[in-house]
Length: 181
Image (cartoon, rainbow, N blue to C red):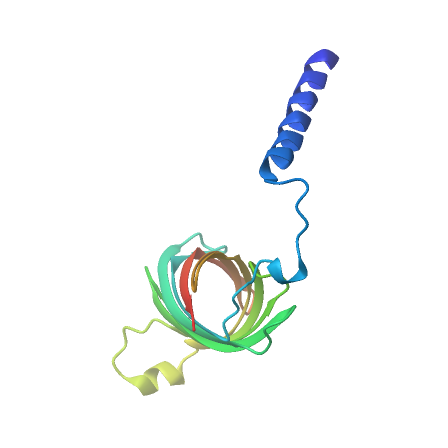
């Protein structure tokens, strides 16, 4: 048993070290300050979301899609942004969510956000006053994050969010496609 564990540890260690050593092209090359890799940060980001909304209370799953816009204030270090989004969930019940977002990107690939929003439930009714006179309009608070893969100014982001409406919690998860301008 100990011999097998030692062999597995040796293989893992050998793999990690050999990958690091082989990845370096020229061991004696000195990298100048001006030759560091340049990262492109865009102040404007427009995105499309495709995913699902899962209610943790009753287990219902709905198709969810939306668009979002974010403006980032800084191009150096931690980036902070504000924006808005519109999202729809289509399943047993139709819902629309409108909200503003506050985003923070501690690294180029990782983003966390909080979004105070309004949710409109059961939009099949024809009379707008009927929607407002019932409890179908509620406050929603969204917490979430994503990891972004960049392809020049385009991005693909696996995303997960937790939506809190009163005492009910739902998970929104999917893929975001974006473009930086």
